Amino acid sequence: MSHAAMLNRHLAAAKPSATYRMIDRVAARRETGAKIISLSAGEPDFDTPAHICDAAVSAIRAGHTRYTQVAGLRALREAVATKFRNENGLDVSWQDTIVCSGGKQVIFNALAATLNEGDEVIVPAPYWVSYPEIVSLCGAVPIIISCGEDTGFKLTPAALEAAITSKTRWLILNSPSNPTGAVYSRDELALLAHPHVLILSDDIYEHLIFDGSEFHTLAQVEPRLASRTLTMNGVSKAYAMTGWRIGFGTGPRWLLDAMEKLQGQQTSGACSIAQHAAIAALTGPQSFIEMSRGVFQQRRDLAVRMLNETPGMHCNTPGGAFYAFASCAGLIGRTTPAGKFLETDEDVAIALLEECNVAVVHGSAFGLGPYIRFAYALDTDTLQGACGAIRRFVDRLKN
Ligand code: PLP
Image 1 (cartoon, protein in one colour):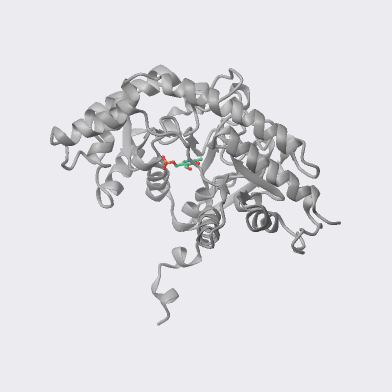
Image 2: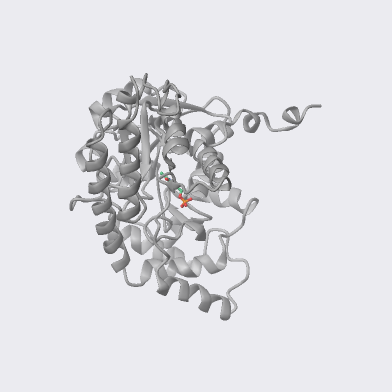
């Protein structure tokens, strides 16, 4: 029997993530001694704030090193419920919450707990790469709706209506969005309130929202949908805690119970030490959020300006997250200084890595090309250096 035949068939069919492929390419280039500026990582470049690290150290010293309840420490669930009540206006108590090993596990648990073979899940594109892959791993079918620049990369009610069938189980929404930074307004969300399907609201970039805009989440905008909405969030992006692996969610109890049952046979409760750190993050001083939002907004302004000054590229001003999603349509069909013909956005991304030492991820990996995703989680000097290198590369393209 071949190795592929020994694998689960859904896993065997899954594509390795394009972001990880880029990370591997970057590593291979670095091994040759090249100095690469990476605009491909989906994480803040800041360190986790000191008071959060201190709480983790204290937790270890106090012996909080044992298994916790599967759905999380009561104190963390209380803090999560308080966050959802105060910041999002959701009427929840600690029993209406679950803590998982990262927001990704919240999503995986919810989909794996509910999907059967052939069920459909609506995924607006451009999407975070994991959504369609997780749906497929569960044996269900991702229904990709292409949302172009004309709608600000956002799903419209008409497109949603056209995609819903009797097999639709979930709609996945993500605002601010990875990879486009698009933010849904209250009115836009209200128009997406559909009377039947479950809705996953991925709010992981909630606090990275710019220009004084207010963040909205569907269950708050449409409280009638709370009984069918899983609101997901976590500490990864808001508190620069990607490695701590703490995510959380709130939703109907039947769904949370099923997710807990699944998690109980998989990872059990999330890391006890990281849970204590997350309590400190949610209940301690919040000044880090304001600081990082201000810094990211300045970087966004710099990156968007420089990309828009680059002939052949253009970029909408994203309202949130730390990504700029720039069209590279004007580079397609041209030839690089090293003689490579640029046929696709992936060719552009590879050429940027190989010929100007800048790592980015191509838009097609997120379901929409020809675009390039720039993660501007880098200091301004480095960012300026990267955008300058891209500009010089583009100026030397041949027709
Ligand atoms: N959702 C989106 C849109 C993301 O970009 C990410 C991480 O990149 C996650 C969820 C998962 O975050 P984590 O598992 O670190 O909490």
